[in-house]
Amino acid sequence: MTSATTPRHVITTSHQRFAHLQARGSSPTYERLALAVHDDERAITFLSTLPPGKTQPNLLFGVMRWHDVPVENPAAALAWLHQNHDSVRAALLARATQTNEAARCAVLLPALAQLTARTDGPLALMEIGASAGLCLLYDAWRYHYTRPDGTTHELGAPGSAVELHCSVDGPVPLPTAVPDIAWRAGLDLNPLDPHDDDVQRWLQCLVWPEHTDRADRLRAGLALAAQHPALVRRGDMTRDLAPLLVEARRQLDVAAGAGRGAVVVTHSAALVYADLDERRGVVETIAEHGAHCLGAEGVTVLPELHRQLPAGVEAGGRFVVSLDGVPVGWNAVSHGVGGEFAQEQTGVAQDAGVVRGAVGLVQKGSRGPGRGGVHE
Ligand SMILES: C[S@@+](CC[C@H](N)C(=O)[O-])C[C@H]1O[C@@H](n2cnc3c(N)ncnc32)[C@H](O)[C@@H]1O
Image (cartoon, rainbow, N blue to C red; front, side, top):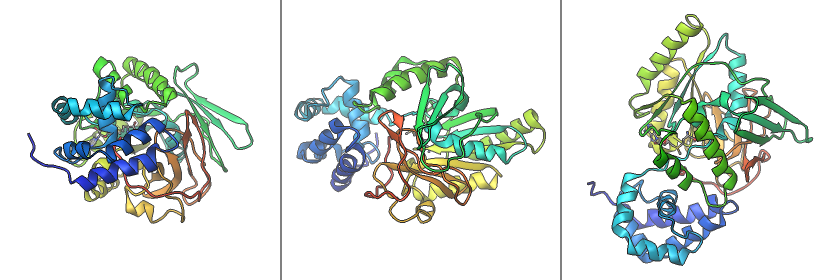
């Protein structure tokens, strides 16, 4: 067992930031609970005996939900915590935050389609930090984009049990079709099997209490993924990426002809798990192998991207969408879909955001507090 511990100020700060920047306006239950933990000396003392990475609000609250603790009642939840330190410790050490959100495909799809339009063949798609692989299944979902004038645009799998609703704002180059994916694979420290009852329940426990639409989407998405699973390999993106990139190119050569098509590595809410040097190393490895890199991460996860954003974009809980080191969208709500897609720089996607299940767009340049990366 590791003897590493977490400084108290790291725990109090992370709970306060979580409450104010992530949960506020999205989950009043978790906002109250995070502030209650922040104010509870015993809870902070207990959490400070755990290693860094095991004290995050999402992880603790997921463990509480797993045990059917009434998270809407912070006093009762804290009382339960203090009666169960040993089992909570074991659960926090055993589990990890692995939230898998199919809706992120709607955020990334316009940029993926624009990229495809510039290539001469299909894609080999790789996702780092793939969890149960839902974000590899672009062609399994049905997409509904709503423009600012109220007109809609649909594409994707007809009759899919997972419908992703996305409102867009601005001159969005909405795709007419989901790109042809000739080969796909994920990489994750802990690949999750969508068939597995324990996996299904744990992923549900990671969905915030008020997000019932997300819970439904997850249920339907995992059922679809169980029928058409995407291969997710066990491995560390900071060490095991290069061989998979070589394999992706080889598979694409076989499927499409030598040198045709493009290898694309996607990442969403994943780079944040590595330290900054490792994140940069991942991005460099992708580029060195001639692959494209398309991601959605917290605004401050890659300073190189952060620096390129217009002033005032650092909205709490929002993601920036980037393609090959260039921000192409911002203000994406971290759990979902949406986007304002404008013609800038790469001419691809701009903002994206999910608002209570439907996807809402947030105007470029909207103001809000900044935030660091969050593990979910
Ligand atoms: C919050 S989940 C995001 C899942 C998915 N990308 C999505 O957006 O729905 C982050 C995932 O990254 C994985 N992960 C964290 N560190 C990793 C690493 N060094 N290498 C590979 N996967 C990692 C975790 O196991 C987890 O499944």
